[in-house]
Image (cartoon, one colour):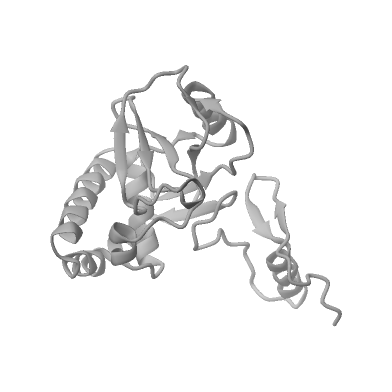
Length: 215
C-alpha cells in the first residue's frame, strides 16, 4: 500500500476537540473495516495540542508501585509522594470536582502575550476550566503509570516547550513544570505558586486546561 504519510506527522482535530495523528485515525478506521473492536484512544504521552487522559482508577491500582518508585528517589521522591497523597485525598473527598476520568490539554503557544484572565477564559472555552494543583499531581501519577521515570519528573529539565499556567484551589495562580523553548529548565513536577492578577500578561507561558470525561 502507498505510504501517504511520509516523514512528517500530521495531526487532525476531532469533533470533541481532541488532536490525534492522521495515521492513527486511518489505522483505527482500517481496524473498524476489518470488524475489529476499535476505539480511538487519547495518547498516553503528554503532548502539546493533544488531550492527555487521566484515569484515577488506574492510579489507585498502581498506588503501591508509585509509592515504591518515589521512595527509590530519596528525599525528593518522598516529598513528591507526600504531595501526591495530599492531592489524592482532596480528589477522593471531592469526587464531583475530580471524577475518575479527566483529560488535560496544553495549548500550543502561538501568540505574543495573553493575560491570566484570557488564559482562564481559553480553558473554559475548550473544556471545564484551568487545571489546579490536584489535577497536576494526578497527571504526574498517570505519567508514572504510563512508564515515565520519577527521576525524570523531579530532577531533569521539562521537555515541554512552555511553562504551564494553572489555577490553584484557593483561586490564585501558579506555574507548572518548565519550558525548554524559553530556557526554563525546571523539572516537570515543579509548581511555583503566585498571586492571581487578571491583567498580568505572559509572553512565554501557556494555559493548562482540563475536561471531564464520561465513562
